[in-house]
Image (cartoon, rainbow, N blue to C red; front, side, top):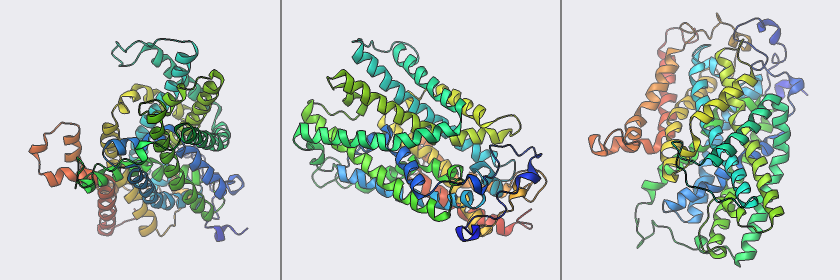
Length: 501
């Protein structure tokens, strides 16, 4: 096969020899040679099926429905958001596939050899939050297994953590399993993903079939009107809710739209990463969100109450064997999503801070520790806060980073990178003492329009203290941040007297 025909760089397998002694180099950050690029379109589709088919996706539509949407508006919003985020996902994946480089090394071209730590660390801290959330969900599943099997009577939380001792112990147990897998490395992660993709899809479809058969249909949620329809409590307010909700849904995978080179560096061809991602991401997100809505709707008939949490639904099964099997499948699925989506990138990002001292494994352990300290059960306690504070807030930072990377790689550099120079402290990507001032300015200006609205959202400012139009910019945080940073970066590069120095 001709590498150029696949859009792959000829020198990708050979650059390591000239850069191995650099302090910016270690084996985990090195370009992946052609001999190790084995991911085809099906591998990328399986990756996205594995990562998208998870409990947060199942529960995602619930937050939109509780905000006033009907079921199809919620599912369509999720699908549309994932079609939107697919665009920067595929674009940023291009460099990983062509040159075999991971995300933090890719950032060096735009941000500088040291400046790349800024987007890498911002991305890493978001991943730490997500790692904690997924670990909390897995621990909660284990806790509920214990409650049902051992007939425990959970006590209300009375400690400063806001959760019971049993919940915290199960959280730490599941956290320990994650740490064990990180210790055993990337191959264990790939093995988990291959098991998980069919496992959770099968579990979701079985749950859908059970709900339909037991309830004699899909229940009231699928027939309830939108709260934004004429005559309903929020009539005429659909668009004011839709756009911030769409931004939040884009934010759900805004993280991976940046660090996708961490995976696409293993792709055989550009066609494989494009087709695989296009097939795997929007469809799985919409399907699993629909399964969540339909099963939840049926629970209203079956149990007389609306249950959005699939873990709680499974605890209603009377057969202990069925319960344990389903919960174990859920734990494995959560584990696979967590390791792939929330460990691979921050492990590389933390390694990038000190390549000679921090390995992929140590970076993964750092991720795990920070994930615990962020107390993730508080991040997901409130559906409104989950979307409008957590998802939108970090999208205000990640949108500008995406705009800068795409502007630099596609517009300024025409997809051409000097790979050895990315690993040199005195090469063309040194900029100003290792930092690209143009990129840092674009990042700040891209995030700035969303700051007033964020401060209002967390109640650091009163809504009356700033113009309403300025506060509402926060509702479009990812889009505004991306656009502003994209334009500012291009203008800054054009004005710079030596744009590539």
